[in-house]
Length: 141
Image (cartoon, rainbow, N blue to C red):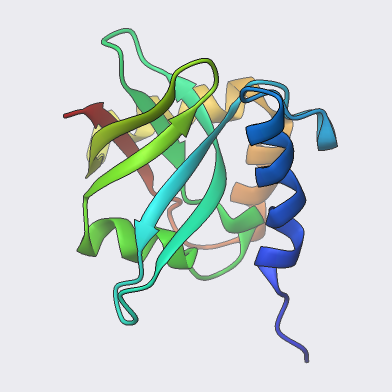
């Protein structure tokens, strides 16, 4: 089986995000994405990944490491755990420095419920895998 090249999928999304101040019409993303600037845990190479975000009441953002229901976590999840102080690009705000924290227990479950309520796709991702899909919180530094 050939490994899927996510950068070839993500590059047009990243370009559209940047060209339209965070609005991405591709696949109906709208203004729901954030661009994560993360450092490879093994390689040390900076990468950029578009990820759906949900704003929190305290001015932060939630992201889910769903990887479309794959049985393994996305590489960016491991990178964020290894290097939790990153920059993100946000619609209407540009680049913002954040600290990443993985949510656990009831806090994770409540945050995950926001994703499944927002999009039926997240419910299908959960049904495809036996892993617990991590939810991370981004807080301004």
